[in-house]
Image (tube, rainbow, N blue to C red; front, side, top):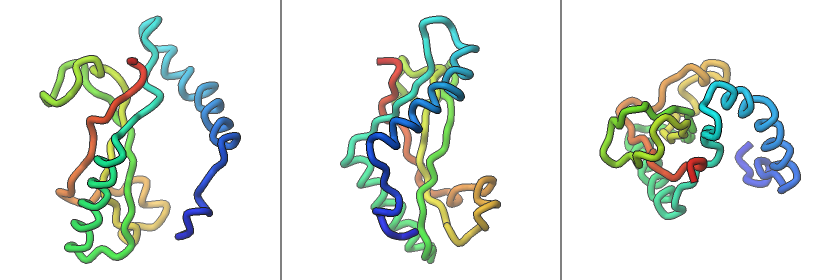
Length: 133
């Protein structure tokens, strides 16, 4: 599906996904977290930074000869001790997402789940997460 409209949801459909996540995965995640400290649920990136990143990985994949370019969004969790000075200390111990380039021709749809992002390609992180607020 290369057509944007084939990928768009309306707000009611998005609400169904959000409520299902809260009911299942999110409640399970929070059952093992400290009371009053729910895990992150929203991830916010400045639109200009995100666009610059998309341009950067598109150019990188173009130089590598990758024709069917994709973007991978991966789940991660910040450790309890900072690994990078750019990390907001309030985010320690919270779930996050990060972005990387993906060669869509490099693996079958089944294998793509286990495939690695573009080797040595740029990875985007350090957005804003909520909670914490």
